Length: 239
Image (cartoon, rainbow, N blue to C red; front, side, top):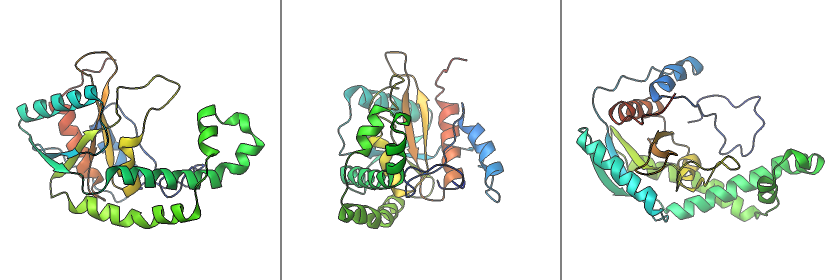
């Protein structure tokens, strides 16, 4: 998280923006990342499974997503991994609201003039989003709570552990939207590394994302965990 400089990138919310990588496989990401971040060690080859900590969320989760994650947990255990359950150490929905306030306030500030000058450059959904309002007090509160949220998330994980949770509350969306980002806001707001591994669901063709989240600064360890997950639970992606 926040390893690759954002200079030269038109920002949306600088307090949240980070450069993310996409690849077919987690071990591809593990190979590429040290070449983009000088001094970052190569992600260790997985010698055994990490401990997967299934996060119990207060956010409402769709039944199909719950069944998918139950299936992932069962397959992980069959593959020899330890899976434990643990309460989310912070108020998940409160953090989601703080993320929204922070993202919206900075997005409005940065894009207000551009939106007025070239409104056709923005789609209808983003335009409506940027027409909302956030009070200075709400923005200040959202900024102030970030460090403590990160500290609480880090403290709730032990060595060799990663959080396990859905990436989105449904299957991959149709092309007019990137989908509901609520379940991704915790890692983004806290500033901790996260990766999404696709797996095909029990029924239907579009994949679900399985999200792994690590402690701050443990990007290479996270990619090692994601590599083990992909190698042990292949998604059977088509070429």
